[in-house]
Every structure is written in structure tokens, then in C-alpha cells.
Image (spheres, rainbow, N blue to C red):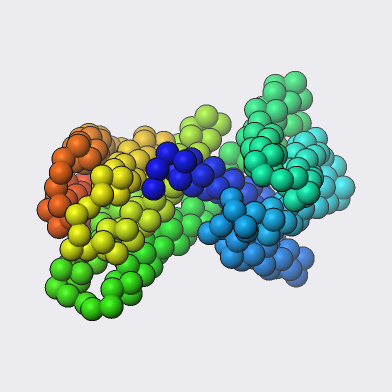
Length: 349
């Protein structure tokens, strides 16, 4: 764990999350419950599985496999967006820049296979940069072409099924935290109350994150408006990244149960939880909330940000593992309490 490790993790996470977002939004806009959609969905699942196999060493010996797997995923998206423009001229003004962008990304990843490191990863960075420019390009096109703007407005008309997809992705990431706890325990040849207690506290942190997100944010549509909807989508990136990093931190904490906690592990844990909670707090400001629930949301938001700030301060302490985990859980109880209170209000409405 270090600056280089965090930078590598962030880069790879953004690359994969961006691919997932583009695939998800395509199927949200143009997917149907037919054979064609199912076939391409299964093909994408194969490429994602291949990326997952290579991801653990994507910046090392697995870089060629990861690049080819990612290129295959992007090539599928390229074809889907191109096909949409061919068969539906109404969508062609927007589908063309998407298809060209994904094609450029695909080619850069394929070319990177024939280039040695670190230039291979520079090409990946260029591909990611071009992908991230795509929303700005389409917004500029929308200002000049009402037809393109109409399609952009459609992409920001988030449906309940899209909200559910973001929630399901969150569940998968939180499931990885549970897997990390299990892996950490499995790494001990002799189980002890200390190992069991550390694992249980790690599970409680995962449950707290689940509780806060699904009580406050999930199942709520974002407020209308291109900027608000874009903020809602992109805030899921640091939220999800933080939750995934919590899993990595918990794995280290459980594996080193009974030993002094390294400062870098402590900072990874408190930093990841802080990012996840702050992202949830910001997401709460982008969603549609019933007027009668707004006061409790405002109070919950203030408590969430305060808890996040105090959690971050724990990084400056020298607390050992168990006291640190207990402190984190106690600080998370305040927003969890408000989440429970919100859930009861919604249930009784």
C-alpha cells in the first residue's frame, strides 16, 4: 500500500467503472428483452470475466490479457452504438460520436499490446482521457444541434431500472468486502477470539455502509436536470471506489489481526470509509425526496459529514486494531440511526 499502489488502483477502477457505466447506459437506452440483447450481454459478461481474471496483475504480467479483454468489451459497445445509428437514423447524430470514441479506445488498447511498458499504460491513459472527453463533446454538439440535444435529454432521463442497476453494482462491491473478511480469516492457520472479533467488526463496517447507502440513496430517482443527473451518476464512482477500497483495507486488517496495525493500512481504512460516506452525503443532495422527508435528510446529511470528518481524524491516531474498528462503527452508528429513522418514515408513509 502506497501512493503508487493507490494511483494504480484508482486508474484501473476508473477504467473498469467507466466501461461498466457506458455498457449500462447503452442497455438502459437501447436494450430490449430480445435474443440480440441477451447475446451481446452474455458476450460482454465473458469479456468482464476475462478482465477480472487479469485485473489482479493488470499493470504487470496480466497487462496484455487485460488490454485485450477491455478492447473486446469496447469493441462490442462500438458495434452496438454503430448499429443503433444505422438502424435508427433519429439516434445517428449521437450514436456516431459514441461509436467513434469507443472505436478509438478499442484501437488504443489493442495497439498497447505491441508496446512495452510504461508506454503501454500511457496509451491506456490516453484512451481513458478520450473516453472522459466524450460527455463534453456530446454536450457541445447538443448546443449546436437540437436533435442531438433531444437525445442527450433522453440519456439523462433516469428510469427506476437504471437506479436499480446502480444499486445492484453497489451490492456486488459490498459483497467484495464480505469476501475480503472471509479471505482474511482463511489466511490464519489457527483461529482465535481476536481474529473472530476483528472479522465480525469488519462485517459490521460493511453492513453500516450498506445501511447508509440503501436507506438514503437507493430507490430514489435523481432530480431532473442534466447537471444534477450527471452528478448523481458520477458520484457513484468515488462512492463505489471507496467501498471497494474498504474491502482491501479490511482484508489487511483481518490478516494482521493480533499484530500492530501499519499506518498505511489505518489510513487506507479511514480514508476509504470517509470517501464512501462523503459521496453518499453528496448523493443525498441529488435525489428526489418527498417534502415531508426533507428535514430528516438535511439533519442526516449534516451528521453524515460530521461523522466522516471525525473518522478521517482517526487516521492521525495510534489506535490498535480493535479500538479503531469499534470507534469507526460507533461513528457510523449516527448516520445509520438516521437511515433507520428515514426507513421507518418511508415505510409508514
